[in-house]
Length: 142
Image (cartoon, rainbow, N blue to C red):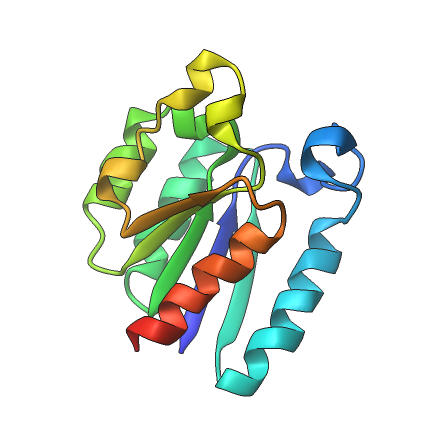
């Protein structure tokens, strides 16, 4: 099973940025742990991070041709990008939206997602474990 984990803006700063919200673990550390946990289940994980909206859309469209599942943390674009929402809506590949922080406990503008209506599910507020929970969905689904 091939899963793309797609991270949006500022997630390259994990471990440094707002550690009280996002923790001190880098994305590289999180991804290594995910690979260690899910490789025994024959899950191939692919990671891509970009700060550019159009690159997220390109990655979603490309992954729709090869991936069995997509985990998307679109960062701040979650709340602003109709275009990413439209790209998710067009997918035939199942997608789980994730966020490290609890969006419901944050600023009101973060309470709206243009992605959630088209995702199989949404997981947020569990720190880096949000990714783990999303990947478990794909194990159960297969």
